[in-house]
Image (cartoon, rainbow, N blue to C red):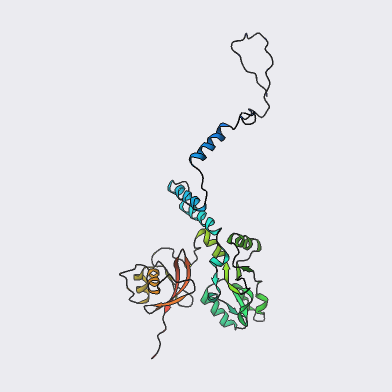
Length: 309
């Protein structure tokens, strides 16, 4: 709808030349009339000059930290965003469980032995091999193993799921996309020569974004961080107090230099142990179940076997 411009110095009864009406879209922008950028765009350019945006990942991470300090984003949101940025530079080989530390099932093992292995390891999926560990023929879901108990006539091979192979160099962003589209939760990682390098799960990838995914064994009350597993061993958090470990196992581990069991084990070992490594400290055997952020998150702890003289 057009409008006319009032001219107060003219006689209201005189007829002036008709004024050009504007289009129905409202006012034309300054840029559309050829007079340069609109004021808002110019202001944005001035702000960008005075406060330029981040030019690198490290600068972007610093910007996120500043946003958290200014309470523009929650700490959990910042951590997830940083995880996404870090994940872009990681590959399957960076987060995989190395082949020597993989929990595998032998297709020729009797049912009772397979069930004991599944309970002891506590995973939901297992690679299955035939003959030698390198010859992985499929993936077995722990829940599928229960079908053999009710129907012993079933062939274990019929319960195996197809294997997904990925190279060590596969980017985690691409791997996560493949996991989601193919509905797979586990992949076997191979090296440049086609040999098994390890395995990686969707949980391993997601934990790079959101941090460790807690499960029913994880510490809910923050008191001790020590839990009894199905096979009678103990699952001990890396940040569990040494005093709590001594109380639980009746040991006398030193409490004067370190507060947490993870710190003590790393000191005795000379470095932070990796996932799958096992070492003995003070009469206890510590097997690393999970590491995160350069520290051990969970140990599986049993009493060390005493050698008979």
